[in-house]
Structures are given as C-alpha cells and as structure tokens.
Amino acid sequence: ITVNTSGSYLVTVTYSGGCTATSSPMIVTANPIPSNGVTASGPTTFCSGGSVTLTANSATGTYLWSNGATNRAITVTNAGNYSVIVTGTGNCSSTSASTVVTVGSGSISTPTITSANGNNYVCDGSSITLKSSLAPSYLWSTGATTRSISVSAQGTYYVTTNNGTGCGATSVPMIVSLQTPPNFTVSVTGPMAFCVGGSVTFNVSQSLGQSYVWYKDNLQIPGANAPAYTATAAGKYRVRVQQNGCAKNSGTGSVTTPCREGESLPESMQEIQVSVYPNPFSTQATISFTLPDDDQVTVKIFDMDGRLVDILADKANYIAGDIEIKYDATALRKGLYFATVTTGKYGTKTIKMSSL
Image (cartoon, rainbow, N blue to C red):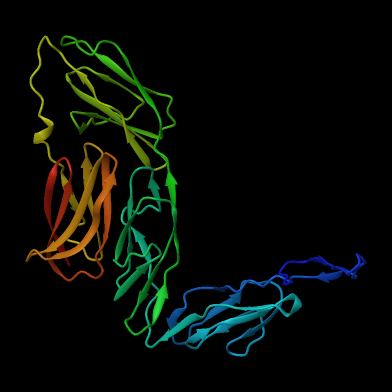
C-alpha cells in the first residue's frame, strides 16, 4: 500500500489452511511542508543606494536564499530575482516564488500627499481629493496612475513616483478616517402660514452638532447660528448642522404669509458664487464657493487657450454649505488661468485667476 498520512500501519497475512500472522506496527509520520512566501519591508523598486529587506514567512526551519544567504531575512541592495528554500522537520522543503528587485539610476524626491480641502478625513457619503507632489509618473496604493485621486472610504493611502529610469520613491502614507454626519431632527413651533407680524420657530433637537447655519431660500441668514430660528417672513428654510467636520442639511420647510407676500427667486434661476483668494497668487490658491444643496462637483483649471491644466475634483460628492478647495500652484507657470466649478444642479461658474 502507498500511504500519505500519519498513522500506525500493520498487516495480517492469512495462509492456506486458515493460519494467520500479524506484523508489528509501523509508525508513519507525515511532516508539514513549510510555508514558502516572502514579505518585503517596502517597495522593491528603488534608486541606487537604497535597499529592501526580504523576510521568509516561515518562522521555523533553515533557509537558503538564491544569493547564498542562510538567514531568515536578507537586506537587498542590488537588482535581481530573489527566492528562498525553507527546510523544515523531516527534511521537508519548499521554494518561494521569485521576488523581483529593481534598482534604477538617477534620483527622485520623496513625494508628498496633500488633501484638496486640507482634511485627512472623509464624511460618510462624500469624498475627498488626494494630490501628489509633481513627478514624472504616479502609482497610488489604489492602482490609480493620475496625480490626484478621489477617495470615499477610510484607509491608508500612499503614492509611488518614478523618474522614468526605474528609480522610484514612496510617500509617507496618509491615513484617511471616516466621519459620520450628525443625526438630528427639526421640530416646528407655530403655524407655517401666518399674516405679516406672525412667526414660526424651527428647533433642532436630538443633535450633537457643534455648529448651526440657517438658510432662507438657499441664502445664509446672517447671525443665525443657534439650534433654533424664528422665521417672520415667507420663504424656504433649512439648517446645516456640523459635527466633527462633517455637515448635514435638514429638509426644507416652506413658510407662507398668504395675507401679503412677494414671489421668491425660483431655484432653477439660482447659481453658485465662486471666489479665489489670494488672487493673484504665487504658490497656493483657495477656490471657495457655497453649495445650496448636496451635489456632485467638478473643479478644473484651464489656461488662456482653453487647455486643461489640472483637475481638483471630478464629480466629487460634497455636502451643502461653504466649500474650500486648496490648490497647490507651485508647478504652475506665471500667467492668467480660468477655474471652472461645475455642479449637477446649478451649472458651471467660471472665474479668472492670475499666477505670479
């Protein structure tokens, strides 16, 4: 018989005439084959003078690397294909797949990651834009190869850049956390329709909000920053509650004064207002605008000939309220440019900006 599992094996032989004899047991031990994976301490593509440590995944046994080393971990400074043979109990062994190490020529600066809105957190249901410093090529931990990426999930993000000759560098990881917008309810005290001189009060309750901004007809009401607001005129009212950097808008409550009231501006005729500061700018500019409602936003930079220069946000989900996007303009040439802010509900707004 052929056996491949551990156990105690014996055989009984029967002779003619019915006589039998049984052998002594033979103990068979099937020893495990050691794991054969290899873990790298960092990127396996780096510049001349760099290194990477390769470690066999198996914590027991003896090791023989393709370069002759016999330690569990080796530090590699030269290009090549590296594998390891791990020998364990019973002289059982396994060979890992090859790990390719590439050493490029020249040099490249370590890239840095910045967040377009200056935050390293993302609000649940929205996204933020992460941008790498300028480099010849980009490879993000997500697999993206563009300079900027839009992320909507918590996680650790990093980017590896390459100078085109195999010399690469990897950024310090940016940890993006997930924040949950606040939960709250709005109650109404008083009638929603009244004559001039009457009023109705909106109250925010069951809220852990840290700030409150009230709006009438999608325009911010100056000084209205308390959990309650008393309306004395007709209009559409809502509140934006912010908690831990994330904001959420309430539904809209329509107040009418049937005794006397003029018409309000239809929402279809509204547009967002965009500003850039400082303007002119040198190394950084901030593009600011206010969203009346939650919306998808695309922000692009064009030169005077209409050529696309950069994309700061690409159909990114933003919560209604005041939005600020910081633009790293260190690689921008001096001259005039246009910034366009396109929303799904309010069209496109263009503003001129000047780089010094």
